[in-house]
Length: 193
Image 1: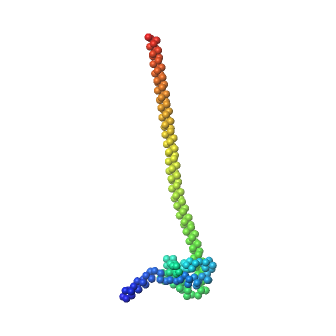
Image 2 (image 1 turned 90 degrees about the horizontal axis):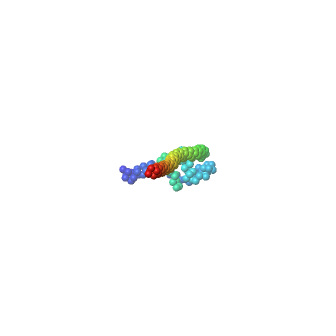
Image 3 (image 1 turned 90 degrees about the vertical axis):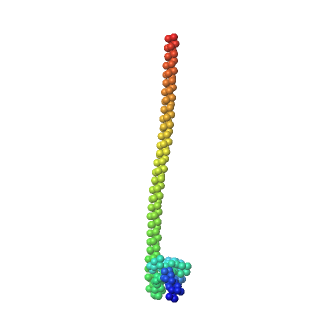
């Protein structure tokens, strides 16, 4: 009852749900970095600790990196504590192997990510290309139709103009024939009169 009132149980539950194990980067780095190969020693302490945690198969969701410490969920930091208790001559070869594996996984992950990005970009390109071809086809079809329509309208205008000219010639011919017929009729009337 007294623990409940003072909030100790809540604090313990919070610690269990959060990241109760805290280890400074410097402590881990100083202990293991001197025995590591150059490519591992070249890492900054936060990255070194992250590489070490991932090499020891601690899931990334079970630890967080702070400014000066690495924080582990309840029970997950025990791996590093057990490593600290063991002799360095046993630990370093195992860590080297695991870090080498981690480095290989990291390279493989980057390659897979690149392949995935390439696949996604290629799929987007194909989708855009298909859309572009559809738009080009539609536009070209429209241009052919517009060109056909212009030529058809020009042909209709020319045909109408030719038809009007033909009618005008026929009307003139009819008028000329009527005038000639009228003239002949008048000449005959004059002859008869």
